Image (cartoon, rainbow, N blue to C red):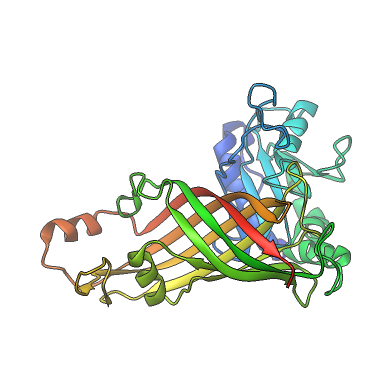
Length: 368
């Protein structure tokens, strides 16, 4: 958290719209609290839900009411907890309907936020998701400096970690209903779905849709700090991706964490496991990207971070559910390739790129 020296003069609200509030007022507040894109204290935007209805349990689109919108920001301390932010234009008066809309998104099983913040830039209302009747903290923009410590103590990264630690069970406690303190992963699969990006290097044109990756093994237990942790070893079906991962310092062994107390056995209240991996591929590396093909020079490099949410529940001896992927790349130019068309495409393409993807998983668990 930064000091009051970072405060801003009162803006001309009458000349601002909703986008201005998001970028001029709310985003600097989130940075001031300690959240930033691409970190363990992450800011996410435009998060797509696999099931964009209010109730995950029935999963009947004809009966489940649709979500009225989506949060402008999700701020999360990876695997510890999160809150959402709903932004309105300064000309809008904050209403109970606005709070109910923000609450519906915040309480959605794929989000599971403990708090949500509703603001029009002039006024801020901070709620506990389970207590919609009255905000726990309110303030106006001009009082931000006076309230910043209280805000930080409720939704700052340190506060989110501390709240998780207060309710976290000790290592050795059962993982859930009818489950001991540890289970083995006997096998399973990941089925990839749609992956979309507007960057020319990441347009997969449906090549991942329906592709299945096997799960070789692993275990689920409580970490030393009491969090749920799942170790998963994946059998990647794409040799090219495996080669690039290895060159970037990544492996097919993943560690997912959850701040939930138990692994859920209810579809309507799934457990959210999260994984974050980062890697770097320097330009000028060589790899065999296709079976039977010789090694080829990769003319560019990249820094990458991949966020994965595994949202699921236990049914019988299966832990199954949905996957959500968010990929972030920063491309690094190498030496000229001698291919003018490729070099021009690289020079004219954005250096930063995002891709969002989805999938499903099914894991077989057994007693150790």
